[in-house]
Amino acid sequence: MNHERELPNFDMFQGFLDYDDEPDENVEERIDKFIQNQVPAATTKKTKSDIRKLDAFLQRKNETRPIETIPARELNIILCEFIMELNKDNGDPFEISTYNGVRYSLERHLKAVKHPQPDLSGKEYDKFRACLSAKVTIAKGAGKGNRPNRAMPLSEDDEKKPWTSGAMGKHSPKCLLRALWWKFTTGFGLRGVQEHRDMQWGDVKLGESSEGTFIEFQERATKTRKGACPGRPFTPKIYCTCEGQCSESCAVALFKLYEEKRHNKEHPAFYLAINYQSKEDWYKNQPLGNGSLSKMMKETAIDAGLEGNRFTNHSGRKTGVKRLLDAQVAPHFIAQLTGHKSVSSLSSYAEADEKMQKRMSAVVAGESHPAGPVKRTEVVSRADGGQDVHAQSMSTGASGFSGNFNGCTFYVYSRN
Image (tube, rainbow, N blue to C red; front, side, top):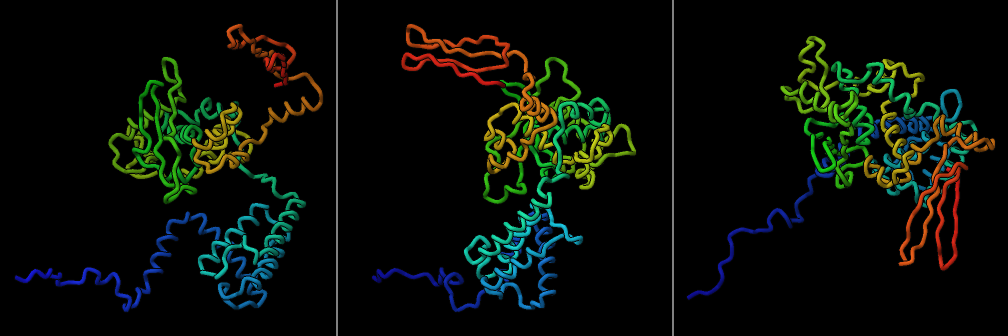
């Protein structure tokens, strides 16, 4: 009897380990295209715009070599000259953020064209980085960097105006969309356009817990959170804080009304276009236009009579974050809500408003402290070794605490 093992009549590795075959020339191209498709459209647009400036500079220098063929040592000098000459058409320097943005656009482009040394933080480009730093210093000297057109958060008084004026509310399809947009932007910490544009029906859901009724948001991929990057560590929730009858601005009540008004619509977009032809059927079975979504805050501010032109969609996110910072919520909790990658990113939201500037002015001028009576907290040791905490009203404008350490009593006071 033949006990030899019968071999299979096919090669299981055929097509996998055949190194004699020529590689598919289109594979790498398809991979690059796949990766490029995940880059935010705004980033791609910014990169192209900055590279056009570089191409124009290279033409003036009669530099015809493709940038990927220029050695890093030479490219270092070329980029220095480019940054030195990079100004507005009238000769004024750009904002500081523009120059920093150009640096990252250059780096993205060098990687895209497969330059052998695309990392501008390497030692090969030391002069370029020093030149960029010098250009930023010049821009600062010209008064740049203050971002005069940056979005401003709404004060508490300003935030009331859209509701009292009727620019937001439950009484019309437009005002309801505005109200939901504002509540989601401030309460969920959403970016003013992109995250709203990506929202689909079902991303926001009604819930109930021992803490009360709430709506929660399940995020999708965002500008800074794509691919394998983790999302928010928890699903953001907005709780109903009304006692008894819900107020006009209750997020839970607004969501319920919207759910009722769009119950027979099948389009997956969360924000639907307004049906101006019917008073009963508020919305169409199609998404709200990008233009309407992008101008949500600007048009609301106009209808509410808010003064100034610095209220943009980003004002909603800034308002929510600033309010949390003013309430002394721990920054790492705020970052978890908003999806910021680092706590340091919140620093730009903490700028002093008019009230805080007036308060600081009063303190510097030595005027009486604007705060009213405060409490002093005192820690008292008990006979059993434990401690009691006592609060005592003070009218001196000071606050603090006292305690006992190794038989010594200490007092710490500070002004609010």
